[in-house]
Length: 439
Image (tube, rainbow, N blue to C red; front, top):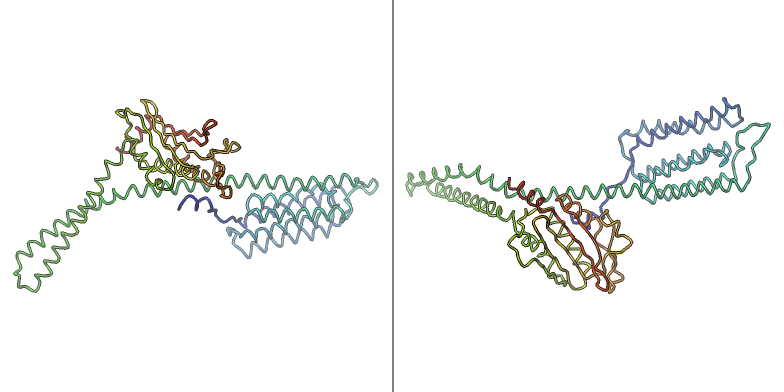
């Protein structure tokens, strides 16, 4: 799976039926207690039977859902939205019977919208929010009187009621958007971490293939050698005129062929071992090679004295991380990208510099978060959508940091143009990785 595919891949959002049913039972209990306290405890006059009928209808729906569906079933977003719309409508009817927006429980309109914002796609949250606001608007003008002391009736000014309506509107809009954004960021982070784990698992499986080939060659080599020896003895013992002579000859040829194949696998596996530990510049050349011939020149620089050049483990995480950063630099460069390496006894540093538009200042503090596009468009291609350095950069940053690296990002000082990505490792950290792999 490529990085763009991962960036546009999101699991289908749905809600467990059991969650909605339990929340509705909680609402039914609260509504019942509130109605009975007002009617019996405070001795206020209200249409008790109409209110109880609405609450019983909600309870009946819960019972029907329990009987019809399995509690662990996950609902499609549209079905969950319909159930949340029912909750809004049920609350609106109760408020209509008990004073409209004069009822302090009117702010419970926010509940279903907030649940939708955290669990459903944005379009359903917008529709439910609009439905809740429409119900609240109707209740400003049409409702039964608020249950109150008949000797001292409560009269709230119209201006105050408009303020209550406006506060409900703002609460639904602001808190709904805020909850959706927080949940979306958490979901994107979880998706990005999952994508990172998938890439690491795939690379790990690839690096294990040579070990499996060596194990197969070792385990099968002895029995195949035995078969080849016995076939040779049978071929020598059976006369050439025997009807089984051709079969014995074919058996020996195939046994020798299998032994040759296993010998090649053994050589392939053993031949890869020296290349698991490479000089740093050789690793950088391996990273750079796939990105040449794309219309952008890539230069590689290194210190003149390479006597103390680090020998590092050919780590898939490092190869992928540096490769992704280089790919972004090539995508945004105008003419040239420079990959430089420096080292001493304590630290190894790799710098990737391009001559593109650089990082956008407004997102410099957010670079490294998933799905953050952090580059400006090229001046000569204003219609191109900004790409790169979103999910792919997050994965690259995560992989490199797991390998002990730290990343620093900056733009070239004026009048030069371009982005600079610096990756640093403690030299002891890379040598530790190499020693661990060798062991």
